[in-house]
Image (cartoon, rainbow, N blue to C red; front, side):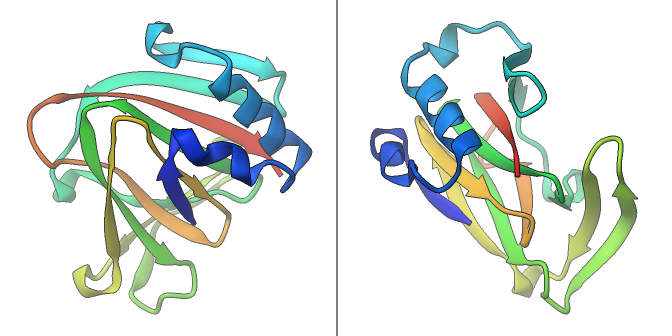
Length: 153
């Protein structure tokens, strides 16, 4: 997993063609002005989901992994905790097996086996297939404005 601020995201260009496409789009568009919904950037290779929500209590969240896509998760406004643990973590337990159509496996994990970072106002996380991640975890009751860019491996 890579975390940082949008002002520094260009340093990750060169890792893959599709990630470069995603970074260029993020840097050259006003993401906060997008309405909620799905936007194709480069067909099924790179697309973006724009969302607004109040983050959830931990009992209502789940860890997830993806096999075919990287996630570039960006909090545009507001803040949330973003959980992480490696896919080899022995405390990671599958709750919903891999769904090929949605490219997701869902998990729960023991509390002591996870790391939490705060994503806020331009904070991002890039998660790879080995990165079990827990988005949308509540810090407070403010609305979160977010985009998730799905980047085909």
